[in-house]
Amino acid sequence: MIQMSHMSNVKTFGAVGDGETDDTEAIRHALIDGDGTLEFPRGNYRITETIEVRLNETGRLGIDGTDGTATVIMAGEGPAFRIIGTHSGTGDPKSSKPNIWEKQRMPTVKNIEVTATNENADGFELIETMQAVFSGVLIRQVRHGIRLHKRNRNVLISDSHIYHNFGVGIFLEEVNLHQINICGNHVSYNRLGGIRIERSEVRNLQITGNDIEYNNHRTFGVEPELTAEILIDTTAEKATVNEVTIASNTIQATPSTDGCNIRINEIPGTDRPPGLWNISGNVIGNQVTTMHLTGCYGITLTGNTIYSSENRNLLIEQSSHINVTGNVFRRHTPRLGTGVRVVDSTDCIFSGCSFRDESEAGQENGASLLELSDCRRITVQGCQLIDGAPWGLNVERSSEVNVNGCTFGGELIAARGEGAIRFTGAGKNNLIAGCLIEGATHIAEEAGVKWISPA
Image (cartoon, rainbow, N blue to C red; front, side):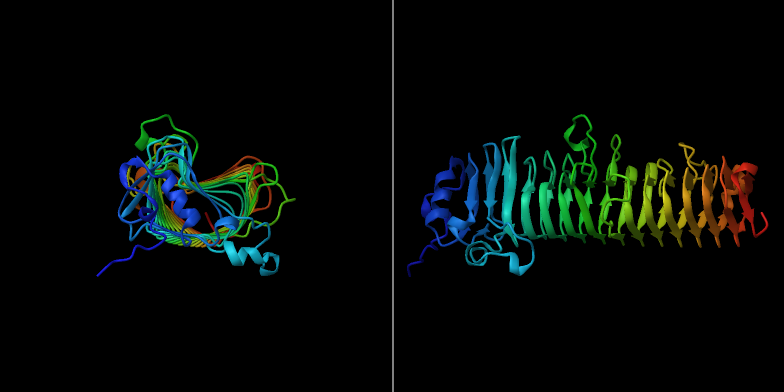
């Protein structure tokens, strides 16, 4: 019985797959003269130049690594695969031209490994695509794993390993992108961040069910650079990221200089569109700062376990309308610390949260469990602040701080000789009501605090 070769099989077009032969031209031949699927049988396919796919010319495309048995090795500079469409519209069906559906929709990459021997090589680059899909892909030891650039719509990245790359795992750089789901992946050991967004306009971003960890310089033995497991920076002109869900992920790290698990940098002010962010149900920790929000507006942090940091579990600066509800803040090892610090921020709520310092020695950095500095209209309600050192709640130069229905205390408070609540600096219209308080209080007269329950 004669077994027919599939016309998209790259070996049919001359690829060898021995890891030494340059298979670039054979793969290009298969792209031009094949049937629309680049099928890579088991083997190691070395290429020296980018395989550039112009969807309007090639038609619909699939790249298939035969159940993960094939590896493409990029020996040249640039992306191993650059997939280019011509979609200039939005996600609205009425904005898509007929040729998008006829030739370009849903370029799909599945079940393949891409790696490199060149430090300036990337995995995949997408430009002006519609409904691109990555599934079951392994990208390792390249610079950037998946880079989205210029304009893309409706991207799915799932069930993949973006692992041990010299740059960023998933990089949204200078891109206009609406609708992207990043789900069920391992994104780890990428030197410049796991998921990173810079100089971009992004809407409808879902990061769910991933393991995102150890994305910093330590594995590479080089000098540290500012990064995070998830880093979103909208400080560039015209850059905005809204309508975001970060849910049900494990986001962990090894502490690194100025390291952060989730870092969001925005420009403070009221002339930008609403944030519309939700960060919920994640396990996040083990960095210098677990979560750092600067200039943010309209973020809900709900039901997260946020643990052990060298600096703070949560640092909020120059932000407003931040709702922090039902989270656990703790440290699980004496070596690290815990605590939340809010600076120069307004209209924030802490509700139903648990704060606890679990070490008998207290924190080396001297941080209180919840610190408010130069803030206005902050509500702290129904929270437990246990075994704080030196204080459970420490408020400086703030006004309209409403502390109600909270519990301050713990078994270690008396042994340490430390306190529950401290208000200092000029303030007005501050209120403490209905709280259970064990431990000392220090309320400066100029702080403008009114008690409705005994100290």
